[in-house]
Image (cartoon, rainbow over all chains, first blue to last red; front, side, top):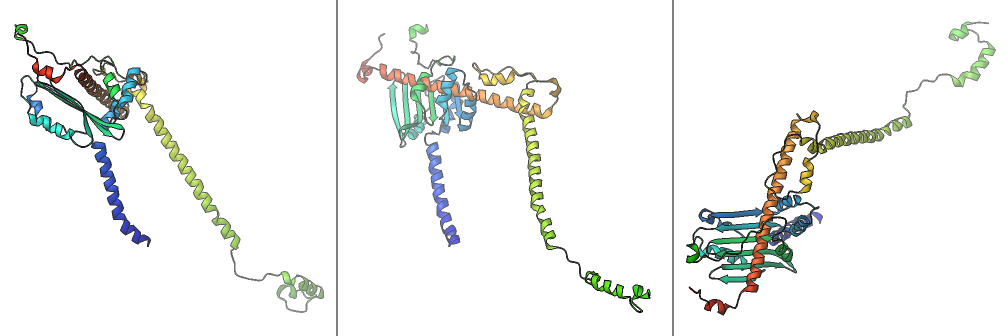
Length: 193
Length: 172
């Protein structure tokens, strides 16, 4: 009887475990956006930034933060639950270096169930800025910021729970100067001369 | 008295000797096969588990001693490893204090030529560099995300209605 139970139940049990494991992995990777489709832009960009911090690197990086410094302690707390941060940013000398398909390859992923758009700012002069959030129950499961203008393409993807308020407060902290991302107004002909 | 009786029981026995024979007769030697006492055998067997336990305990103590010695020598490596001149810290503006503290411990010159420790120093150094590089990348990514979020907030709060944008024209 015991052997009959073992042989008959082993396969379904393994199948159930496999399903659960797959669901768990899918859930963990749910807020991860595939950014590899943008790799070809690096060749056209005058300046490109590619940050890939997976879970292992997150843990490694967390060790480098001091518990004695208040600012670093805050950052350590902020990144404690984050499973990964992925950034791709390209700056171009000329306009039209990226296609609508490049933007769409990201937006398509952000239309998946669970993702919701918090901010959608669009301007002909300043391009567009979109903020997406993935909710997992009551908790934020991921964040994506897509910033596109004529000469810039930036996507930031944070995987895992993140405190938006704390994240927004990071600007200008830890002695690191602000990146100055506020787009400068294009110079008029008179100013150029 | 015939003494032959005392030698080979021949001749006429002395009544006194006969009497003594009768008294001591039951105590004479009677040959029988040798048998090992059963209790002796069991008593010997009882020592084996005790010996096995003692040997196990001894081996465990020996293993624990070796492990402790190895661990102590391993723990002392980072302190000794810092003898080799460290390259200047990588371009990290705010390095972790714990990491810096590890470097400040002096080491004895007697252990400078210890190759395994040098190797562990290199590993430690690589780990530290990896941690600092990851931290730098992480800070950059967080800063970028933070800036973008604030920018989004500013734009959404400060943006005039859509109609106004459409109807605006640059003067000149």
